[in-house]
Image (cartoon, rainbow, N blue to C red):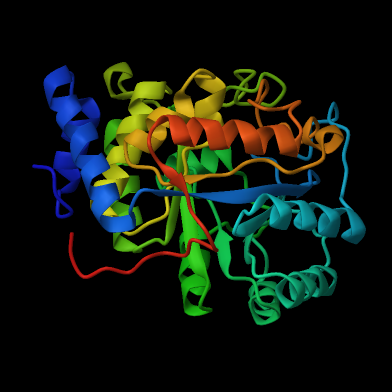
Length: 354
């Protein structure tokens, strides 16, 4: 069964599938749904990593506050706006401002930047700044922010607690925050890692079902890439005990399956072919993602000196490429698969049927 109403059990069966003929059917179905639901345009989002400070101790992430080997930075207003000018020049429709959970990014300071971007450009503004208080989210929405991306990494609560420690006595409830973001009128996005130690096929199938139940506007998924400088990568975290046969591998091929299944159950969503895919397959990882359900790419416009320090995982693709080089490279790659670059903000397209 390859339709929007797949059960969790059917999604899990597709994640475990070994028959290459059937897997080819999955790729074809996902690409067909993508073409009918969101068209052939690939929308480019200018990614701007504005700070690598973080108050969290997420065990998989190089921005972990306990990682003393990382040189920290926070971009100035002037630096951010200069990069926004580049984004406009390159014809991208969206700026994505991403950071660790950094309370040095003050609410009103960022609201002023958002207001200036919205007043002087036609860009959509996406924020990805972690678990901020509801008052911050309201203020940034009022300032003009259009979208908010808050990744779950996993909806399995036991696994989540292992990899994402609470802040002191504050419990983390990202599912609740996603609901708040939708109520505030943000286009709302989330996503998961694939192949986290302790992640089962069943829990990954439930993640995909959650994307559908929340009717997410954006879904970003990518393989877990080990960082030896933080606890999970260094083998210092005990994941939930599971049968080895149930452990999800962090492979390129399974990542494509999750993209494809997500496209089928969330036909209207904007789904990126991620930098993590390009990292594990530098030849054509992004292109394969685009051919298996994705419709968004996020070229990095962060100044190169800062980009090197935004090290969630090591060896990230395009780490030393200038924003200009990234722009011309992506244009050629997108053209090579017969797709066109989208114009404008590329918001979610609501449809009545496939």
